[in-house]
Image 1 (cartoon, rainbow, N blue to C red):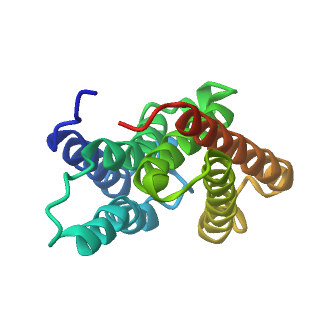
Image 2 (image 1 turned 180 degrees about the vertical axis):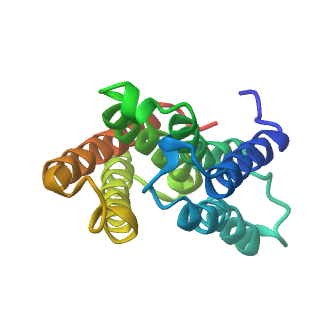
Amino acid sequence: MRRCPWWVPVLFLVLTVGQLVVATFMPGLAQFEGKAFGSRLAAYPALMLVVPAVWWRMHRDQGAVVPWGAFALIMSPFLIDVTGNSLDLYDRVIWWDDANHFVNWALLCGGLGLLVRPQLTPRWVLVLAITGLGAILAIGWELGEWVSFIRQGTELDTAYTDTLGDEALGTLGALMAGVALATRRAS
């Protein structure tokens, strides 16, 4: 299997932070209004780097091959989210938000699953662990959205239905990642 080069997750981080800076400090761009981009500028880079930092801390003296591909998968949902906002896809494409919750959780949990797959056997345990982790992360994400911009924003009337749908789609994306990792031979 071809390895992901180190610069891919670095590029994802740089592109995400660059767009967050524009969204936070360029006034008058309607697609960014009321969506807590100041909070995202602080949170997204931290969330993108927490797993690589923990991995590095645990494996730095072991000479392990750095899992750049897993890190890229974990970072990609943040880039996709910010790019979707930059291109105003959340407001212009009716299915964009739903697709993001499914696909982004599949990517995120796929990356996390690659990191834990060697330790989890049998395969069904991997599927349950990745799905459960994805569900927990989906709930946490929705709580973060609620605190940062929904409870005082314009989306309050539709928040309950949207939140339930987002949590379900995120969990299904995590399930898909778990099944894909369990059925694919480790390499």
